[in-house]
Image (cartoon, rainbow, N blue to C red; front, top):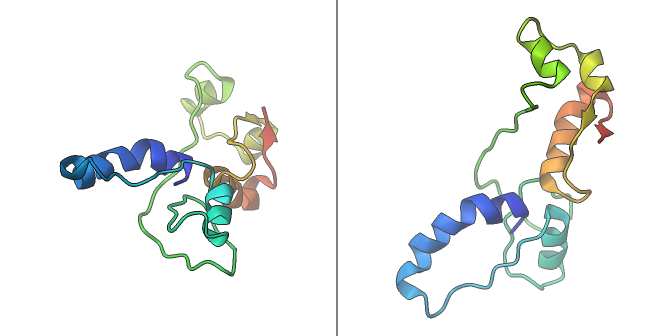
Length: 125
């Protein structure tokens, strides 16, 4: 189970599915996408739920849910203040420092893939 799914999506699903059968709950491991994919490929886990792309040819990947990622910032950040008056430019976004998830995170991979055509790279803060 990758982190975002394990923290935000899984708890209500487990409560619903296993609340009446708490004597035999599933074993859940929460790691980033790369670690979960590797654990499934190495037969350490039977099943994995991940957020990001998986290119391991040994694994069968099927879409489960869709999601959206938003760019957010503190209300007093210069780009947030500018966005109230005008659209922020790609050059301004390229120059910005980004708070990113760790390497191997599916969220980070997805964000980088989505933004790369426009920003080319993200400057990590």
